[in-house]
Length: 217
Image (cartoon, rainbow, N blue to C red; front, side):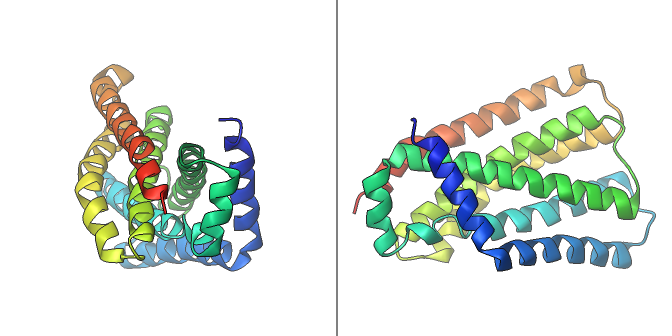
């Protein structure tokens, strides 16, 4: 497991070298947030605010995780096989993508606050929902794209695998965020947070156990 830290650093350096991808993602966040602001108007209900936020985050997550294994394709696959095992690779990918999506979601939250105003009465619960949601999205989409990459870059397969898992995740996260927006105390959402944490743990464990079979040539 000592290889996980260096792998995460390597992924971050690769991402920083790819300035076009970072610029396009930033442009997407600002552009889509401003576009929804223009189309929906400034007075937006809490449920609509939350729905629009997660639409922005969800498609940003797809954009990021779809590139998860672009540096492990072709000849690079054999190089990464020689420097790290499959379990270290998938753990590093999950941690890196979770952190990346967390930054993305916080940025989207800040932009929504800028354009629409602050609609969150309990930011701690809202942030916790965002964090657990990012971890869940990272696990689902990273595993799905790993399977698609090793099966000939089949995007249809990735979608078929990811959609059934993202729907319950989105429902739980959305419910937690709505409760945070109306100012519900932690005691009222503790069960939903526990369910979301258990779902993230189960999906992460599934990715950890299945990835070594995908990593075989």
